[in-house]
Amino acid sequence: MTIKAIIFDMDGVLIDSEPLWKQAGIETFNTYGIPVTWEDMMALTGIPAKGVATLLYEKYHLSPLPIDEMADKFNQHAINLILEKKPLISGVKETLEKLTALGYKMAIASASPRSLLEGITKSCGIDQYFTYLSSATELSYNKPHPEVWLNAAKVLGVDCYECIGIEDSIIGMISVKAASMKCIVVPGIIGPNDPRWSLADKKLSSLLEINQQIIKQLED
Image 1 (tube, rainbow, N blue to C red):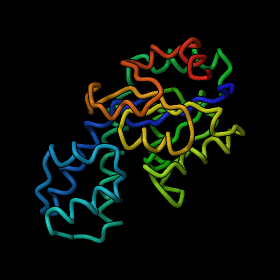
Image 2: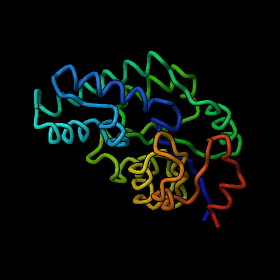
Image 3: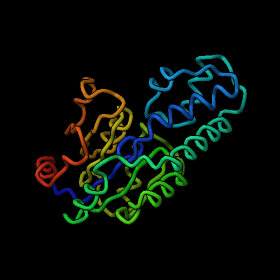
């Protein structure tokens, strides 16, 4: 087996956006009378906006807006915050440059809307590294379903077993493994000592650690 493509999650892997998603969730739901806390949002890390709204409605027994409408408001508030802050993680450009030089195809597979994927990659100057941006919001299923990863591999023209998926969340990791891809995790908000990371093929502390030797190890 030869690895031909590296596919990245975006939030928490390429941009330090998770705290901004948490902030956006608290502010959006609080505005409509749902007393969401930081702890609530932490427990929902990696879950798409619609799923977050559904679970919070169930927890607080409140539904001030249709779920789709609330999810849209949550998404838009988060997008505005992220595009304002442009929180590119240290080492991302160097890593993408290195992997490009090694000849790997690259894509993003994200639960976030395309408007955020396009906006943040362009504003942070990394759009040229990616052949394709796969947004689960345009597909039938979102993470932890593997469709967003399988879609990215299909567009790149590679088989799923020729791909490495890079994630920072437990739900994202499950999604990568369900796609039959090798999985590298770079734990973010969820601590690196969580035993669930054992499902991953490799756990790193930084994207800068990714090199050809590690990729070759995953081929064996």
